[in-house]
Image (cartoon, rainbow, N blue to C red; front, top):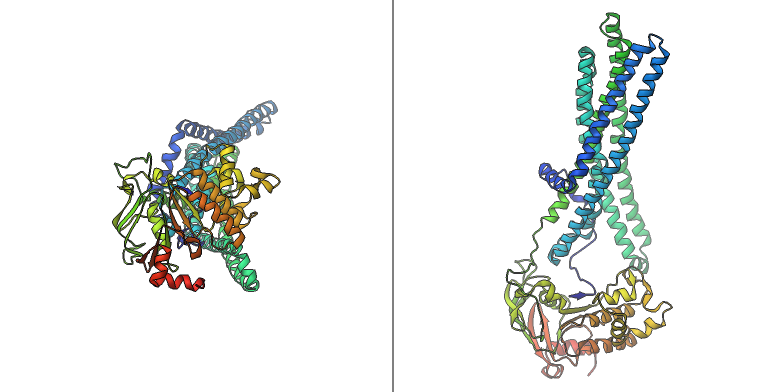
Length: 599
């Protein structure tokens, strides 16, 4: 279906950060992430191999320092010292280059992985029904595509390398220290329980603080998004001061939450440095004592000081990585939860593509509710013959737009049946059904791009000649041709550089280009001045020729020529007929009409 805009009932811009939490199924989420990473096994294997090599080189470099001191510096052997310095230079330079290479490869891996996850998430959005979007605030969904994906990206880009490097370095250094001097090794290992205790205590406060910061950030983002969208209303009602006061509250909340998060996070490094330095001093002190007893050498002490640093650094990194990994796993869990959503509007097993339609539409005893407790439509029966125009009128909230949403299968009915050309719409594929239904809505949505691109959205393979012809039939060509860049005029976001009437004419041209068999006009001339309305109405008349059309209108003057008028009140059809017969019956339609016009 060629859609100019979607009316998503009940959606709002509140934040989804209130769902920030620790992952419930960390193991399952990690398996899902690995399923994406494993598509690049060769590159991952190379990264792991490079990490092993750089870890060995780092351990070797520290060993060479001690060997140089014991074998050459103490003996004042300059040639031997210079030779060892040359070897160490090669080791450290090779280590740096290979570290850069492993990071470069991992960035490529992570970006490809994130690209695939983001593409799958976006693809999933395209399969979900309006019911899903009605029940999930826009801010929540946006946070999945941006914040949650970014958390995954951060963890994959740096976290994987840091985690593997830290683990391998700890294992390698442990073996090396035990091999050199098991007494000094045990002294160096004293740091482990202290670091674990600090990490455990601080991580609890840090995690809660960062969660609160994300919540307040989401609240502020949602408030700003809503404020920008409603700036005109804010100005018209003179509520700038009130809005700014509300902003200050949200901004202050974010400042306090961020301050607390950063304070807790900032405590970690100074504490770790203090503990590490104590450990280094203890290693040197014990080493000095062992040297006096001829159980160690100056070179071994120097090597152990470096090993102690190499041992404590990855422990610190693992502690720091904890929150990053938790955020990534929690974000991944939320992303995969959406991916696991089962679309409630799907093709039946025997669904077939529509090859041609005459356009007969029948509703038989159709009832529907957005939830089962409350029916929005009750026992709707209507019959539209090919080429007829059916006007749906009634008070706001009576169910007129819901009828259209059911025809286009944005929702499935609770009971009854809807047929097109004698076949239940569930027997048609959703894509082919919507391709044969053109929709022009009250608030015409235009995409960023040129006017030509927006009209061409109705049929991407259309030629320039077909686009211009569609614009002429829609009465849009005259104003487009007047613009400096004509059809190549760039449209701002949501068409803000065009008037509402111009946007509506472009949307009509788009629908004409799509050449649908069935047409839906949902208040297509509302909020338009009289002159523009005449232009739009003429364009709509051209669009409606030979097509079965459903028209929703509050301006009843625009539907006087409709083949049939269906009057809906509280979800039920209470009157039907043409304009003349309904006026003569002096029922509810008559009351609506005379409230707008004098007879």
